[in-house]
Amino acid sequence: MNCETCRNNLLEYYDYLLHDKDRHRVHMHLDQCSTCREEYEEVTKTLKDFHRDASTIEIPSSFVENVKAQLPAEKHSTKPTQMRKYKIGIPVVLLITTFMIALFASTSFYYSVLDFTSIDYDHLDRTIAEGYGEEFHMQEEHKGILITITEVVADELATHIYYELENTKDDEIYSIQGGGQFNIENSQEIWSDDHQGWFHMGSHKILSSEQENVERGRLEFPPIEESETIMQLSINSIASLPTEEEYEKLTEMNNSMSYDMKEIQGPWHFEVPIQLMPVNEYDLHDQSVKVEGVEFTFLKLISGPTSTQLNYNFQFDRHEQSMHLDTFSPSALLIDGERFDNFSYMSQYDNTGDYFVVFDSILFEDTNKLSISFDSIRKNNDDSIVIELDETMSFPHEVEFLDSHITLEEFEQGEGQSSVVIKDEYYQGRSHETLFINGVTDNYENHNYSQSSQGIFVDRHGEEHSYYPFNGQMESLDQPLFYTTEYKIGFDSINDDKVTLKEIRIDGYIENIEINKSFPLEQVKLIDDR
Image (cartoon, rainbow, N blue to C red; front, side, top):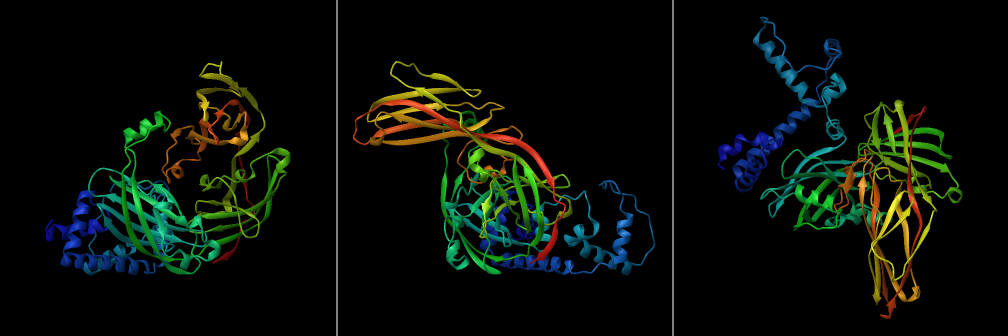
């Protein structure tokens, strides 16, 4: 690429409008050409200064009211209207043109003034536009993989770092697949000893991307303890995702096969500025509701640009009804029919002993129209069955339990070890998620026990998703439940003597019971904007 072609593409490069290969060519040219690089830096500075200055323009209230009065009630048409001809002076045209360009260059104008319902900005766009986060173009390329830090949003609830990962050399799609593949080198400087541990490995969410060979994602870390800091983020390695063909085979075979996963070692290193943004705290006045015999009391709500935290407690006799309390929690917040889901589908404890759950951010929503939704409850059931084994049995061996056909397959028994594979196929309407299965041998004290399982995710729409080991993928599913479909039980002898597997015991199961109830909150008072 020559200098003229590069310069002609600088604006499109800045706005991520170039095709992947053209973008890579511009990127490589800027790395090698100091003249074009200086021009790009000047372009970047000019655009940022322009947007910053435009956002400070004060719009006359009379102009705002006149604009609103002229807007039609229905959705705005994109069809151009016929313009009338007026004789006005050139200076007036230039003045009006300059004002309107500056005015509409401010993204927040659409939210604070026009409120166009036909303009569909997502939450992150608005967060950046209104100053609750910062946009970046921090890039590092290594072995043909270009990683770009694009946005950072941080508050007292969480720290979110958004990135794009682009393969510039071929069509393979790569992903950051787990906490072990990235780390914070200065974590001890950012968080106190009380917060050190596995949690600071962070969590990862894969987001949708409209560009080929580009993965977009979000890394989430705990909130920083100071108002601002520099986070030394290292991405140590990445791994390829399966192709569509490989994914279909994984789904068909329920992850019983592998695919040709490629791994590229880093590191890609970034020094990321983090600045803490304010949150809103609301008093919920200890409003209480009763759900399936459990009384929930809602204490407070904290809403920030990253997420929303609901603090509550409840009264419940866990021994009487034998329920999984940590999975019996509010599922979503509802505002004007829009749903803001629970991040983890389970509750946690804060330092006061109260419970809390974390939802998607409602920072820009009307909290006076807030409802809390409970979708389901997970319950332990004690129904049991004993399957006695002997050498005269033929396999596969089928037994009925609940509404399912449980199949014992691949039974092996002999010197030193014994194992059995148990199948529990998924079908629509299956009530139980997981069985509590154990094996019993003749001399249990001298045997080592092992158990593994496989299954599938089923989202709230009934769509099935293969179980596969890609961190960040599950969070893109809509309220998934995991159904175990295969168990493998094994015993190894400590003394290499014969292991006789006498029986298989099913001692209960976990059942998901749909509730689908929502409760409006009548008192939501803003008590702190911090």
